Image: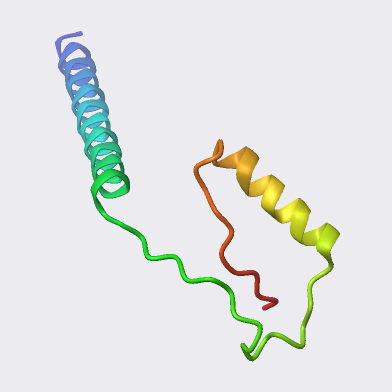
Length: 86
């Protein structure tokens, strides 16, 4: 039974250490994201009508659906700057 106790102890220590490390990774990732969003300025360039994709017009209803979906998923913080067919 002693070997089983050591095995369970190692299992517990391993699971706790993995949980702590993953929690630290998530916290640091969230802090980096918040820092970048707060202090790094994003240059937004307006869409030009003279681009090479100007001939491929997207349906306004589809564009509205894409913009609405991005707005819902990002809770108002995301912006659609360009839509390209791939």
